[in-house]
Image (cartoon, rainbow, N blue to C red; front, top):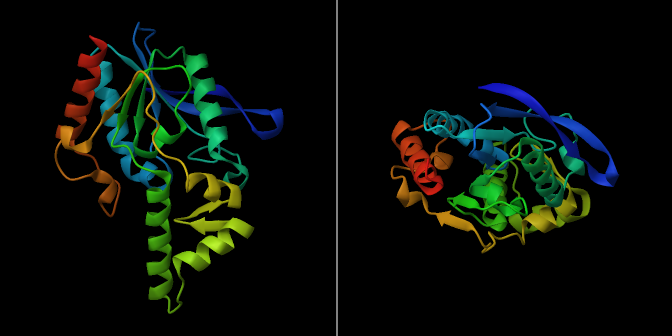
Amino acid sequence: MKAESYPCPLPGGAAASEYALVFDAGRKHRVLIAPALFDEGHKLRRFTVEVMRRLDGSGIDSLLPDLPGCNESEQDLALIEPEDWRMALDAAARHFEATHVLAIRGGGLVLPEKLGGWHYAPVKGASLLRTMLRARILSAREAGREESVDALMEQGLQMGLELAGFSLSGEMLRQLNTLVPGKKVGISALEHELVGGGPLWLRAEPDEDAEQADALAAVIAVGIGA
């Protein structure tokens, strides 16, 4: 496992160098990971890396890129829209010569164009948004303030909004609220029940589960034929 960089297109035609965590031995089968988004990305990162370790043990390379505005990226998330993430994944797929994609949760909302593969635990963008809005409302209530979903969305669409520690533009909120997992040729949806156990994204803190990582990696390895 090591960190590498890939050339990532930015809004307005510019480009930046973003990091990617890779298990890369130059093997035939190479899986690009479209990571979970926002707070779910933090909660599922350890699980994602454990899946990658297991793919490595099965003779499969895997590549987990940072998206603009996330993790180690120096880009301003408030200037990023979902299409920018899709373009980043396309660029990472080309750079690392990926042969398949594994999207996790909200990562399936911004799939790269030409890769087949799997979408684990699909979720609508509106569902991700509602979860972050509810968390903000609960936090405000604990601080003695009353906020509502409708008022926050109205404010956010006009001025942007901070949710779960992420500064999101009005356009990000608008697009996220309408994004749904697409029925794309070559992409198989994998419901969470396939891996068993409680969903890790519902836990209070980032966590991992060896049996879940085993199960998901096994599905990918069998699907690839490794």
